[in-house]
Image 1 (spheres, rainbow over the protein chains, first blue to last red):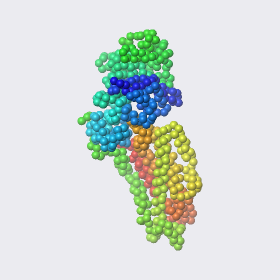
Image 2: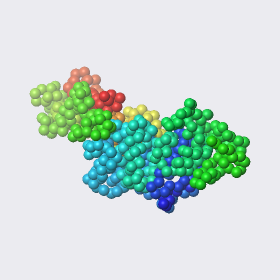
Image 3: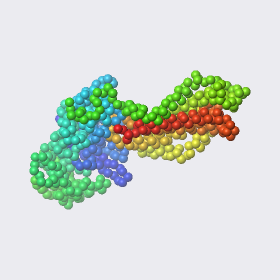
Image 4: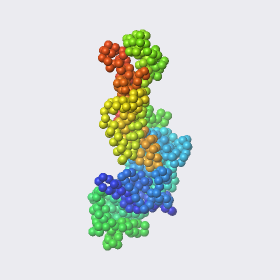
Length: 330
Length: 298
């Protein structure tokens, strides 16, 4: 498998009146063809901003800097706005969290799909309409030729999200960003949508970057997981490793704070404290004020990326030689 | 069949899809007062269009032997100080007044919408510049500015349209800007950007249709104002110039007290028509507001 998308040292900052907010700090990762990558973290940890930055959809006062955002070897940061537009929706597509407001209320569902298809594939009116209906059918919408003529307010949340997925996949993008696509839906529909995305991924061979705060959803969908905290990657590995053998205290906390259906746990363990104010980041490791294992060095220096076992990376002093102490976290 | 469809309120038989336009028309039709306004307006427009057919006399033919005659079967609305038939002149005056109203309010709408789009969409310094310009326009009393402009440009029908159009776009501009500021935050705009649509297309095809409702309402109300301003300017002799009649300049003789007291037929018909047309336009505007207000959606 070759590298499809390579993000090197991505930094996104917002220059607000109150100060500079560094929403994404030195995030790097690679994505292979057809791979599914999960990004996990609390609200506000920079998951969505990182993905929007890759598509260069960050508006003023936001600023995106990186050593490179390479899509099949082409640096997207060097692209002009016009070239970038032909990438968006065509080679990279985005599914948003809130399906209820993601469709324009004044146009029919079919029209909106058609618009994207015509723009990127140069089909005529008739062909693009046919393709829209086909796409709606593919995402499991019954009577697609009728639903295409409906306005969004007539569709339920699950149907809208299906339509959004249809729109995102209509040009068979190489990379699909899914920003918590099931968070706004109820649980039964969630399962359907996840199943759908899983099937479509195999059919179209699109690489997916799946953003979620829900490790349960992530574990079913993706091959690899990145855990983010305060705009930084703190742990990265295959999904199996993250779920079964998490290393970073934050990841452990995330897993412990979620109920497990097959285990008998008396009490859920929440992570104490709350996410720090982005304007006043703590020194050193941003997690140290909430961390049970915090050491002196944690408040002073940023931990480096350390390989704890093969293909399992953690940014934590507990696992770094410099930290001086390796604990056994069973 | 999927269980999702069972929840779907709209019928999947899409032969009669309720488009937003159809919904609005349905609600507008139920509003009796607004429908009355619309019918009156339609009648006025038809009368104006049919003026050459309905006119009983030559529009500008002067008959000094037949001056200031009160209404009769020969001259339905009587004659003016030059002996011209007032019925004919009022019919033709409607053409001019309504045209000035439509052209001027279209002009202000084009300027206002474009400026408002730019300010609301691009924000930052574009917004600052445009907003300061509107502040400048708003800080002058409208009529005083219009009179000054008319005095400088010289009175004519085209200048009247131009003056009204150029001086009244600020309201639309602010309205569109406000709409754009809120629509810009909507997720479907983000989604449109993420699918690679150009900025022009996003503004024109996605944001503007969503702010059409308030623009339409304000356009009708501004059209009523434009008719009033045209009448005011022409009444003062700064608007449409004789011999071209407009409802405003037919009223001109009413500046004299004798006319006002003794010769009611010189000013009552055009005055009444201004009143009726402005009222019916406002009724239509109110009806549109009710029909388009999303909070009234059932």
